[in-house]
Structure formats: structure tokens, C-alpha cells
Image (cartoon, rainbow, N blue to C red; front, top):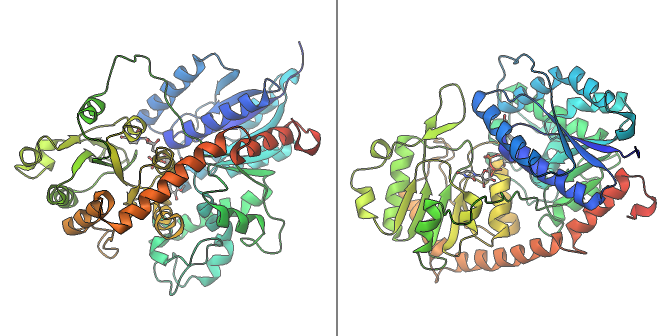
Length: 481
Ligand SMILES: COc1cc(-c2[o+]c3cc(O)cc([O-])c3cc2O[C@@H]2O[C@H](CO)[C@H](O)[C@H](O)[C@H]2O)cc(OC)c1O
Ligand SMILES: O=c1ccn([C@@H]2O[C@H](COP(=O)(O)OP(=O)(O)O)[C@@H](O)[C@H]2O)c(=O)[nH]1
């Protein structure tokens, strides 16, 4: 049998990470034109719900008949006493090191590993790659701005006066971004316990060992940040990491049944073009009862049409929201008052399909990076309502850097609470034809959507970056394929 190498992909279990990495892997596979296969090492997800989700993804993707092999890694113990999901992921993956080594070392000689591509929180696996002399890459499913920050964390530690950025005076210097107010730092670094900073800083340092960092962005969207990283401004005095901006990597589910229309989509079909504002807060986003009342009041007073994906409080001991009990959560009379112009959807919604619908004209989003890229792809301007992870920094970049969003004021001292009047103002500015702020965001987002489509098309920046990456993995001269 002819010898053909494989690219080993090791994604994190969360859908936003897992499916983004897998989609990137599929693009590598396609660009490789059969020169290598893809091997995905699948970790046992730490919760039952996530395990079911991952199994579903693997089953569906395996059935596509592509040149992808899924290898399940043996289960390991769960680390305890972790302060946040990043510390958990970092320690959990360390426990997988011997299994990952055995899986890669055990590949048949005819399908040796040409590269190992790991999730942004899995840099502990570089040890395995180094031992086996396989080039290691990071797949960074978040923006380059967050990468720039992570690379800067070792140096920024000297500027801290407390364990996190909360007490810091002045602004944070994230190369390539305007000065960032400390309150826009990722939530877990603001109110940080020190382990949280340690976990992020650890990965920031280790990125420097990678042969390359594959980033889910475009050079057009994050030009200044990518240039700052490439010019060595994040880690002065060290060779800059090699970047591959191959985005936007967006996963589009294939519909099994074209006849079936989701209830949300059926409802949108009956609304005028660009008239509906979507509110959706990601896989881990939910609000408490007081905040839900403010959202309801803000939407009612805005007078605009809306599709609100409203989730209930998280399952105890997890961050996964439950399905909302609308009778309990919504103020009395709200559904009657907004009947015909509003739909409240209490569970997971088909967000990409909704964003692609002509009736959707704006998106109040938690700023998860996948959601942001989807919104930009479909040319939908945003109101950022960041909740967790790096989302506050994403929100800052969207408003102050890229200009595709209308800002939302939050009470940063009161758990980022948003008053009804403020949501009403932001929704009106986003959706009203007469608002200058909304007009600018709409114009910029249309431009970005067109740029995105050019970037991934033949000869586009991301397509070219992908081809160069494939040539590098295959060791072809001059990046030729
Ligand atoms: C990127 O910065 C942070 C990401 C996370 C984080 O952690 C996480 C852990 C899990 O066990 C499952 C997950 O699904 C998950 C998701 C997650 O954040 C989201 O990751 C997306 C990448 O695909 C995307 O970047 C979104 O914007 C993120 O919200 C946690 C964190 O701090 C606690 C981060 O700083
Ligand atoms: O009700 C929902 C909520 C989220 N998503 C999808 O889940 C992903 C969420 O990823 P993101 O990076 O935005 O945020 P995370 O959930 O990881 O914080 C995106 O692809 C969304 O389209 C969805 O389809 N329906």
C-alpha cells in the first residue's frame, strides 16, 4: 500500500471548539488533494451532555465518507478544584498525554503523522509532538486579538497590581488594538484567582514552541493585530510565531430534509426583510430573572420585531443552560403584548440558519467568536452583550476596532447588568433606518461579509494561507502545491 501521511487533530469537546477544528481539518484535507488523511483523536468529554454532543458530531461526520479516522482516547480521571474551565481543560489534557503518545506512535508506518494540530488549551500535548519529532500546530478558534493578549500575558503580569486586571489603572496594551480598558479583559482574568491567569499565561508561553498557529480569522478583519504578532510586538526579542489566517471557518450543517423547516425559520418567513433582531447567547449563556425582566421590557419598548433565544438557569454544577420555563421567567402579559412581532424560543435554536434568513436585520450576541464570524458572514450587524471567556475583548474589538457593532452600556460594577432603557436604545440604533450608528455598522458589516467570501474563494487570502500551510506540512519547496 502506498505510504500517505496523516494530520492528527486533537480538538476540545465543546461544540464551538470541536466543530470549528473539525471544519478546519476538512478544509486542510480538501486543500491537500489526497496527499494526506486526517486522524482525529477524540477525548471523552467531561460531562454526559457534552459526551452525547461529541458522539453525535463524530457519528454524523464519520458517515460522510471523507478520509477521516476518529480514534477514541481512553477515559482519564477528572482533575478537581479547578477555578475555571480553562484550568480544567489544561489539566485534563495533561492526563491524556500517555494515551495521545501511544495513539500517534501506534499509527501504521504507511500513515505516519505529518503534523499534530491541537486546541488552543491543549499545549501540554506539545511534549508528545516534540518527543515523537512531529511538527506541532495550534488551532486557535478565537480571534487573533485574544491570541495577541495571550502571547503578551507573561509581560503584562509585571503591570498587575492584584491577581487580575480588575484593579489595574490605565489601559492594557494589546498590540494591534486601541488601548483596552481593563474591564474588557476576558472575564476570568479580571476577577481572577491567580490560577486562572497562570493557566492562560502557560498557554501563551507555549504557543511560542509551535511550528505555526492556525487562526480562525482573516487578514482583512484583523490586519493590525496579525501584523503586530507577525512583527514580534507581542513577545519582543523572540522570533515571532508563524500565523496562518484561514478563516472564517464556519461549520454549516447539511440538512437531511429540505421539506422540514424549523419553527423559528417558519416564523421568520412571515416577517419583512431585515426587520427582526435576533438575541442568542451561545452554548453557555443564560441570564437571571431580574435581567430577563429588563430584556423583556427593553424589547417591548423598542417596538421592533425580535426572535429571542431565552435559556433557563444552568444545570446544577455545570455551565450548561436548561430549557427556559417561559411562564416562570417572562413578565406577565409580555407574550400577549408582543404577539405577532416577537418569538421567544426556549431551547437550542438553529442560529446559522436564522442568521442567514433575509428577515434578520440585527443580532444581540454574547460575542462567542463562532457567533461573531457567522454574523459577519451573513452581513448582520451586532449589539455585543459579552458574558464569559474572551467575549468582552471580542466585543471591544467589534465596536472600537472593526466598527460592525452598536455598543451596549453595561453596569460593570453590578455583574454587567443591562437596563431595559439601554437595550431599547441599542436595539433602536441598530435597527432604525435613521440612526447614524446603525447605518455605519450595517455598511461596515456588508463590506466585511463580501471580504469574507473573497478571502475563502480561489486566490483569496485565507485560501492562499491554507495552501501554504498544506505545502509546509507536506514539506514542499517554496510553499508550492
Ligand atoms: C477562548 O477563550 C476562552 C474560552 C473558554 C471556553 O472554554 C470552554 C471549555 C469547555 O469545556 C467547553 C467549551 O465549549 C468552552 C468554550 C469556551 O469559550 C468559547 O470558545 C469558543 C472557541 O470555539 C469561542 O472562542 C468563544 O468565543 C468562547 O466563548 C473559556 C474561557 O475562560 C474561562 C476563555 O477565556
Ligand atoms: O441556540 C444556539 C446557540 C448557539 N448555537 C451555535 O453554537 C456556536 C456557539 O459558539 P460560540 O463561539 O459563538 O460561543 P460558545 O457557545 O462557544 O461560547 C455557534 O456556532 C452558534 O451558531 C446555535 O446554533 N444555537
